[in-house]
Image (tube, rainbow, N blue to C red; front, side, top):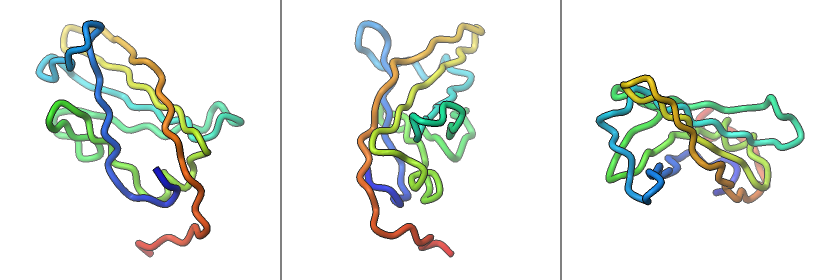
Length: 112
């Protein structure tokens, strides 16, 4: 990914046996990005629910919307994880993944 991109990032959440989770049993998923390892409280969060617009489920993957402001905050390697709340009130967290991020020469907001 490159700083300044505005796009969906595909994230696949799997059961321990490698199969995709059953999205029909999911109440909510909280995706947490830590764009800067220096400041541990600097998080970007995105939430999936069945009527969510910032996170959608498609073809076995969650597509998490990141806008320019979000991606400009990313460091060279941004950590992301997910916590899944199932309809039976069980909460299970995913492994922490790292998204390599390329620098941008300009941080001009093209939507302005």
